[in-house]
Image (cartoon, rainbow, N blue to C red; front, top):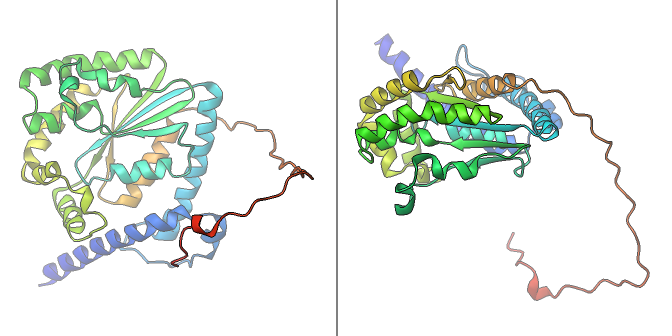
Length: 306
């Protein structure tokens, strides 16, 4: 009976954490030192061993400040960065990417999430459709899924042959070594979650109209084929973990910890320094005596419904 109670409490805690995460996503957009200072110390006391929301917000904001310094360094030094985010469906890749890009310049740091290949792309060299998205100097590109689709969903769902997979495993180490030799900083993250955790997150999405769009037919199939995906992942990590571009596994069962750990690790991979900028001075507005402002017709205004 005590075990049943403990299991029920654990499930309740996990559901509560999911609900809080939905709220936090909106709060983070407005997060700054002033708002952070007003948060109560005991905000949403977490289960034992977890990170409470105040600690999470404080550390996230600190890490995002460091990401801005890294961004400035990438631009200043004309560095090229590619970060791959892979993992099971609902493992937290998208949430981590969002926290990385949240305060960065989208002209410098961009996310690439390619759709299924077209008929023409299927006849090309496999890596060809990814190459145009690689960065120039002073750019950071985050791939929300990448060329590793071939070793995962394409293989498990039968969208390619075993010969295609074998050729991928033979080619991808050389492809990545070429990227690194060209000066690209290449990082590969695999977000790992347990079977029960993925099941819970899928159930939360099914019952949340705002997140149902995240559930694709492929996602639903991934639940049924959990073990097939496990086998495919294990072989992928074993055969593509190379010295020039190793895999880094992120424990994704706790979303807050996963995001903080991933961003902290990413920052350690580039020996960046703070770039000194010229102080920003707002110029005085010029006044033109011969200019008169013309009124905007009322009909052009958006109706003030609220």
